[in-house]
Figure 1 (cartoon, one colour):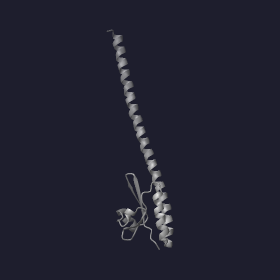
Figure 2 (tube, rainbow, N blue to C red):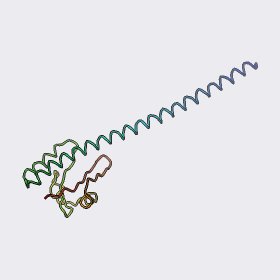
Figure 3 (cartoon, rainbow, N blue to C red):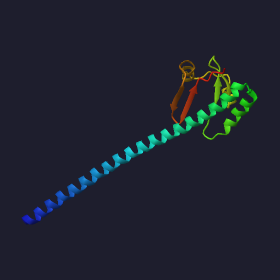
Figure 4 (cartoon, rainbow, N blue to C red):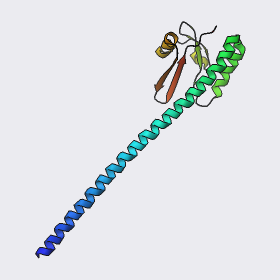
Length: 145
């Protein structure tokens, strides 16, 4: 084999290695960018979902507060039953000072104790949010005067 043929084959082999290396680097770089885009999109969607859930919780809390303050328990009970029809809402409950659920949109929850977050809301005040896999729970102490 002539020297220029060997040199040409060596150059072709080197060029092939450079091209393959470049493609591998590009593939991993694009994959990294896509993963970051995916994480950012998921974070944005979770933030929006939480904001929408918080708005729903706040509006429902205001509706409930007005019925409770006037002592209209029949209207309040009807209001709770209509909450079952709200898409994405699993349950809306009220609990007593003892930490037991006294009113709920889900009758199976009546008389059950609330979670630790609910107990914290009773003592600390404010709104406490519990995040889980596919759900959000909101707790707020709402004293009736």
